[in-house]
Image (cartoon, rainbow, N blue to C red; front, side, top):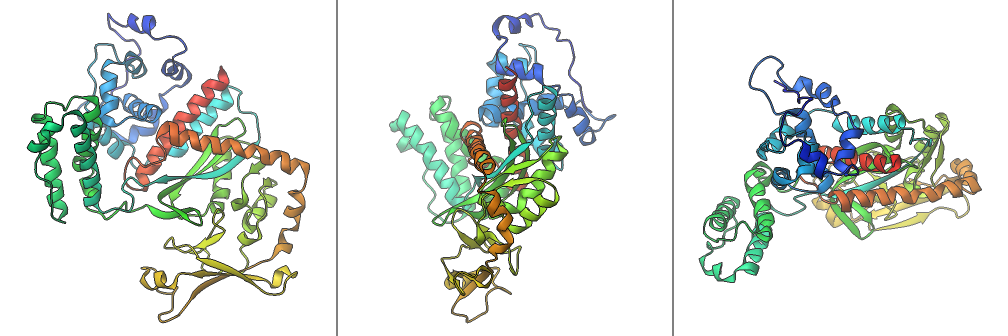
Amino acid sequence: MIRKQQSLMLSPYAKLYDMLIPKDNMLRQINELVDFTFIYEDLKDKYCQNNGRNAIDPIRMFKYLLLKAIFELSDVDIVERSRYDLSFKFFLDMAPEDPVIESSSLTKFRRLRLKDTNLLDMLIGKTVELAIEKEILKSTSIIVDATHTKARYNQKSPREILQDQAKKLRKAVYGVDESVKVRMPAKNTSDVLEDEIAYCNKLITFIETESGIAQLPKITEPLNLLKETVEDDIEQLHLAADPDARVGHKSADSAFFGYKTHLAMTEERIITAAVITTGEKNDGKQLQTLIEKSQAAGMQVTTVIGDAAYSEKDNLAYAKKSEIELVAKLNPLITQGGRRKEDEFLFNKDAGMYVCKAGHMAVRKARQGKKGVGKNQVDTYYFDVEVCKRCPFKEGCYKEGSQSKTYSVSIKSDEHSEQMAFQETEYFKAKSKERYKIEAKNSELKHGHGYDVATSSGLLGMQLQGAMAIFAVNLKRILKLVD
């Protein structure tokens, strides 16, 4: 059963909040800015309304997750800080003397209450609605781009992940007291995952019970990380890697393993839409969805600003049909032409190469056909045939025994003449200069809210992380614009 928060806090110590938490405190401002009761409505189907024990208030649980996104702390550390930080307790609508939750409750809340909810669109919609209500969202332009997030487990075996974390913990311990080295449990020498898990459990037990230094801040962080990996993510550790993460490319010689978040943002720097995909997905394919999600959130969109990834033929046609100006420089290499297997071979704008379904990038390209006649020219992309021979998706793509694997794209620059003329206008050049704003927003997400690495495994976990991080940065931006 949902137990709603009391509107009146009955505590003899409640006046401490007025005395110690200033009016310009960010958490106080967020509490005054946002009516969090929408959480009840959106999560009511996840609770039994007339049976069972009272559940921890869903608003309080949601606020714990928001604090995690704002301050980039683990479950254990966010609960510990809320034990003594009065600004946290005030934000959580707790009396100063109230006990805190068990950190494991946050994991259950994520898995049981937030699963199958469209949290990403819901939270973005709430902030856009709030920005419109405060009359700070006035532009009709959105800026689009994608940012990448590395998978938590990257491309390492589960045993290697545990070995790395155990090594960091031992190093931290030796830095404090090297004399405990002789008493440490013997390292695992086998290649068996279960043996490595058993060793890590022995190491954790030793440090907590015999080392005498487990409570030092320098030891707590790597210790908690190893404990969470062993205890909370044991199912994911039995997988070779994050099951949903894929290889993506930032440039011709730079790749990552993880996810992409495709964003739309106003010129006031309010995020109006997001689509979270696996790492290999093409940026341009998400444009229509980003526009429609922004409109559904309440935005009037007349102009879209993006890089060359968004200027493919389908997007130009969609923008013209929708009477939207697409401020994206044309790149003839991105033209769809007569492509086959369109869903498998995608163009990577940074590398200037095509990427196959498995995430492998072409190693070189060559243009063929008569120079000066665009529609007769073809760009041929060559893939590493040795990689293709071992590829799990080679059936129907690579012919056994072939000495090469190529992919060709027709160049039809005449179909883009209108866009070529548009991008030469002063209006186009002026609007293009606004694109830097979304790159700064990507940096804020990564460096200010831990969005450079996934905090859990799987696409659903990434979507939850994205929802909370974007909600946090939007609220902070609204507060700044209101001030």
